[in-house]
Image (cartoon, rainbow, N blue to C red; front, side, top):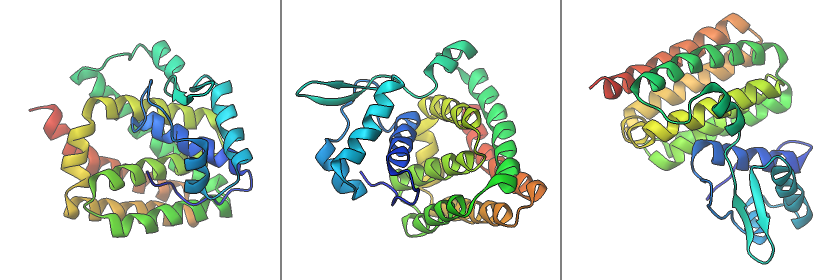
Length: 236
């Protein structure tokens, strides 16, 4: 299991966010055991106290639970309370299409807001993720993980915690319904994944330029491409 290098000043928060992203994406599911403190320390290249602080934060929000002598386990996905409030505990085709529509509205807003509020740290993080994508083109698992990290980093660049939680809820539900198709039709196809990589680069550039409308447009173009692939599967 590979994680992005840490660039934030609050390192424990970054570790917690990366673990939350994995849980939200379905890479770690309720009941799954997290890597040990020792393993996470080696992965993130930080001290054990920093990892324990991150795990404590996740435990405080009810996302994980720590069992004495056993380790930490996933208890719930981020945004599960909101998911229940929205009434999307299970997804059919209609609900999935509605989530695709909601994701488009949310992520277009995220891109626009990020263009106005992003910091140099936000830009550095997105740049690092996009650079990491290139040598992984055609690798379905790595491509999925990098994509999740990118969209989460963009949401976090809005500096609006509600936007982040909304994205995590929508993304986790979509991936539960169409994860395998998403992997096979998007990330395992080198031609498709290369185009997505270029689209991600264009979004970051628009955010870097501080152009809200351009960032919004580039995100909509990117999602239209993704949805054109997924719609073929959903409507078969």
